[in-house]
Length: 164
Ligand SMILES: CC(C)(COP(=O)(O)OP(=O)(O)OC[C@H]1O[C@@H](n2cnc3c(N)ncnc32)[C@H](O)[C@@H]1OP(=O)(O)O)[C@@H](O)C(=O)NCCC(=O)NCCS
Image (cartoon, rainbow, N blue to C red; front, side, top):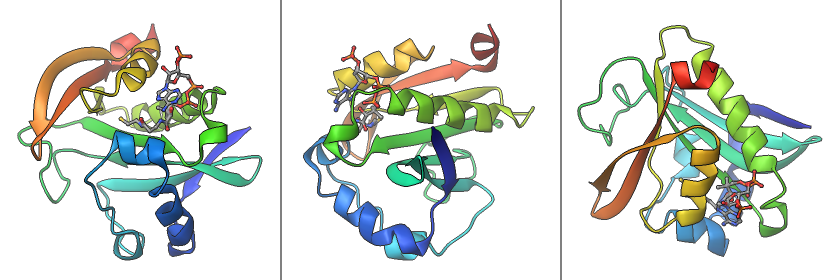
């Protein structure tokens, strides 16, 4: 059973350890998440969540409002979108369906807000496995975009598609 709960400063060491795992580095090579700072900051435009498998943390999910996010990473985006980042911390937990369960919980969480009409994600262009993963969940390719010098594919899950 997968459950999402708020990440706290007590999760910092584990998240830093996960950042050293090769599959996590490969999916997000240059990013420093500044856990010890960020886990102490609460914003209405962000949720940082630990995914627990029967009470044991195995992954992380971040949901942001890309319009309000402070670095404006997503640039000019319309109102009422959400953007998700997701990873599983340790290799033995990959490919067992947990990522799908985490993503479904995250998607439901986003669309619970009736104003939200679509969810965005931006895997690396090279992260083919993630593309397959998201397409299987109903996400559709939108465009290729460069974020901070790195080529990414933007995918979107529209509310109508999710409800079908
Ligand atoms: C993407 C991710 C969250 C999917 O979770 P998961 O529990 O491994 O996925 P599931 O078991 O639910 O589904 C399996 C699918 O995940 C995909 N996948 C994506 N990245 C993968 C990886 N590094 N290793 C194994 N499978 C991966 C595969 O396409 C696989 O499909 P396949 O069986 O057709 O090969 C997880 O693989 C992960 O954390 N990957 C590394 C970080 C990452 O790429 N995050 C996304 C960045 S946008």
